[in-house]
Every structure is written in C-alpha cells, then in structure tokens.
Length: 171
Image (tube, one colour):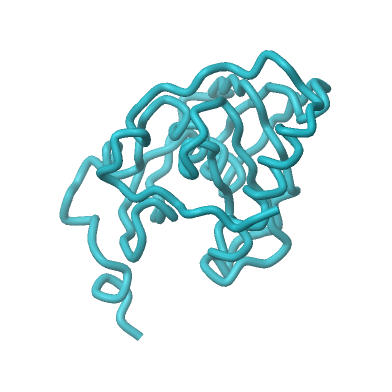
C-alpha cells in the first residue's frame, strides 16, 4: 500500500471522464482503495476520487470521524462508492465553502443540492443506496464531479468568493 501523488488542477487527466468499473472484488481494486485511503488520510481529506491519483475509473471514497480541515462538520460514514448516480431529492441548493486536494490552499463558494440520493456499488459489487443532506451531500457531489472532469472552481458563480484559504480566513 502507498500514499500516491495527488494530481493538481491543470493536469489534463483531471478533466477527463472516468470509465465505469465492470469487475469488482479484485486484488487490484482492493489495493487501489487502500492506496486511496492512505492518500486521503495523509492529506486530511474528506474524500478522494480515483482520477485525482491518475486512475480514470468511477471510484470515490469519502468519510471521516473528525477532520482537521472541516472541524465543525458532523461525522460522515466511510464509504467506497463505485459507478455512482446522484439524484437531487429536492431542488433546494445551498452555497458553501469548498476546498480540494487537487486545488491546494484555495477555497471557493459553490452551490450544491442540499438533499440527494446516491446509488452505486461498493468494492464487492454490493448495492449502496442512501438519502443524505448537508455536508455529507456536498462531499458526495464534490467527489463525484471528479468522475466527470469537473473541479469545484468550475462551479463557482462569484469569483470574488474564490481565493487562497489563508487570505480569505486569516487567523
């Protein structure tokens, strides 16, 4: 297992659409997931998408008990989500600050659906089907955007609300 380099905004691989996973429960998939977990945890991330480490497949991981980058947010159960499909439960959207391991040191305000349903499979091919809201919904939408070549700055509506974290939030 290994901590893998995280691609940064500007790398063309981050703008490609990822391919669906067709074979589950393989040693290669389990190794990749373990690498993603170690990589995410070493960077204090709330989630990580396979394309962020150069793997062009529809696989995201997310979740934490406590997170230094998001100290005020509630726990999100650790999840491996493959071939996800997201459906808004209602049309309500909310603006919120986001950051990204592929856009280090920056934050921006992004509109996201407040309540969603997400479906997909875990690494064993078992169905996942959850209704979630709040920060959990935001994290899932953010990570799944990576699977379609979308980075959060592409969703920002007001560029005055995008900048370096230490400038926006001086201590």
